[in-house]
Length: 498
Image (cartoon, rainbow, N blue to C red; front, side, top):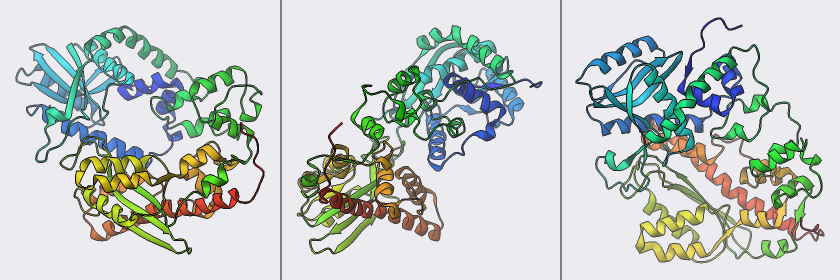
């Protein structure tokens, strides 16, 4: 059916390890994959940026500039560099062996005919999948006649504190030696590659049912295609661990409604199975415990891999904006907001402005532990404001925790995220009418606005979208609290706890 040779690659090899059906689709029917969303594209762009920073570790390195579409030219350039004794480090070196093509992030000459293979990752530590990643590269290089003496993985050092000026690349990155682990995998790589080639020659994809493996170690882009015919209350919609799903699947259970009585479920899983509205006996008391004026506060943040401001570290959250909808005792609603629109460290302005907007009285309603963590990090960064910030922390009232402990609605479908809870109880406050739908997208837009976008009109539009999104969160919290308060005081007899 497939007369032309099938070329594998490092990424295809990793896909095949996750799921043979995923690999089959990637090779033969890639059009079935879901489109790359802005968040995923941002992660990919970040990986490219980190790779470029990592090359600064070896200032004498030479980049193989031919693209992935110029395979033959890249292979030729790589071999010329390998044969040149003056070449100490090669970036994006290309090698092919038995139909498997790899591009190596860094290839460092450590002896005349011996090399160290270095893979660069944007993570903060080595993960099991990284071992497989470098193992297939090492196997291809060895098959192509390159002697690999050592294998390393370069990743970000989250302990690095940027002090200003040029980035200290050797402090920003850590190289961990994986030579021994890769050697332990080498005997299996050839067998795995051959198995994948054999599978890809079949006329149909392998019969593999979707389950927890579809999301680990990466979210499979074919998940929507593979699950399009699953029943409405399929067991994999249950929140929780993969072990629960496997156990139910082993008993022949396909839907949540078929779960046998007595099967051990978490509280949230049981709520989803019961599929009824539930309130705890304490729900009314908790909902009426707020003190006016009630502040509804939400922060947005971004977590850059490369620390942009002095005193920051890789992947440490940096608050960039907040919104506060304030409900007064007489019913008046006031809206305060802050957004840093300039490429500068916004943290002190964030800290001072949040102190000003919440004042010294009233409950501060939030919807996660995120706000608490941000306030504590600001208190640590600015000791002169620590006392005021810690007093704010003491006033936080987490609506997420209230719902988690005291209320459930079938339309939550097992998720207590505000993106699920708000549309279920306040349908007109959903997010689909907004240009920005979630925090990850907000982070992407913010980074582009302050670091990349030059057009003033476009920057203004991005700022408006960011303010509108953050305001939706806080106004949504206010309206959600009202709906829950009405339910709590409606004297509906609560059902027994699960």
